[in-house]
Length: 622
Image (cartoon, rainbow, N blue to C red; front, side, top):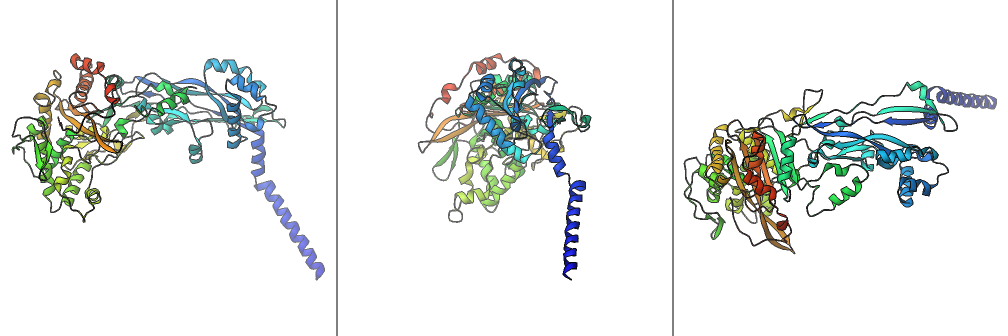
């Protein structure tokens, strides 16, 4: 019995070993893969990144050759670190630090030591790199900007960081990726597809030719070219108008939602973020916390919209049936509410109907409309929520849905917001507590992109397309469907006529009568947005912001625009002039109001920005 047991154990052990050997030799390829990984060098062939064009076919961004010094740490032998550091023109300590970082990332995979060499630097190094085992020079392409504007739109490219490497296995250390703007939003289209070459090495780690005669090699696929919706000439003109000013301009084609210009000021030359000086230049831009050139004020700046909001107050009042176009409201220098409280107004003729109320920007008129809108419902909470419902249909208080990677939601307060603020039901609140909403002040916040979007909806009499920067991908016929789906507001089309007439009156006889453009019928709305901040814990009012929205021509509009100039005093002083010039430039292609142009191009607000604060609170809503 014992002999049989011993024989059984020997047989079982033999079968197990035989089976394991069979598996390892026939089925398990892990050791073969590991062996091949040691004996095969992988080289990537990087494709040309796709070009960017404006709506008229003008080239904005192309490519230029660049060269990276790469290292495979495991292949480094007998290295004189000081000699190579001197050759690369970097401190020895920096070189050693980069080499350690490469080893941590992977001893076997390539990592960059010096990225983005110029042609002359490459020529000086290429003949000497063979002396240094494990180091080689890899060719790739960098962006070549054909324009010195539109940096906030275009974005830039930079090396992938560790977070991206962990998240996206497509990239490896040292590779580039779109960062910001169109480069980031359409990275997968623009980057193309890497080609791969496998190089066979012998047991002495010497390259001996293509692995399996290139059977597994692939060619790179060039990135897609993209046509943007912007008009490069209009964009450049807008940036010139905003020199020495802070704020933004955004223009749309109302019929399509295509972005014609998107100017964030101050801006910078996109070429600053190309080449070996990129890091230094980026740091300079990043740490400019005063002018904030990397902060896109059009997409991320949240401001009170001021008087342009009155057009929406009027539309909601008409839709809710609390005001008709013939009723007139008296104004005696402001709207009295809550006992001694008064919402001030500038001097104009009185009483006014809706059209004249818009043209003359009467605070009393729109405070009356707003209060009736809220008071129509049994409670202020219901009134506010209904008011917000209408505004949300214009894309307000939410992300606009454009195809640029940055943006803010703004704020359209609802009942819950005020319930928390007033600690309801401990303290009740009513329409007068929120009366500043009537004129685009109070808690209402918008980005300039929100402002131009509701202006385009008014121009279209109740509908809009989501703003977008992509016109088409070369070789493809479609763009994302969300940019071709018509968005309908809650306001009936019949109510837009009186509001549009009022906006036309702004130019004819109202607050922008001095900004008329010959042969173009413009509908606009001036605005002055109060600007508060805290200085040493005390709430102070800085110089007001200048705001203007407009569209033109009145019938069959070709352009809608919003302009916001920080600390620009009142609407027609800076924003109105800029909007009028942009409209004329786009529609006519030339400027006839050279008086406006001279004022804006030669004007500066730098002294204003240098002030800690200016004056005590005052009200001016033109």
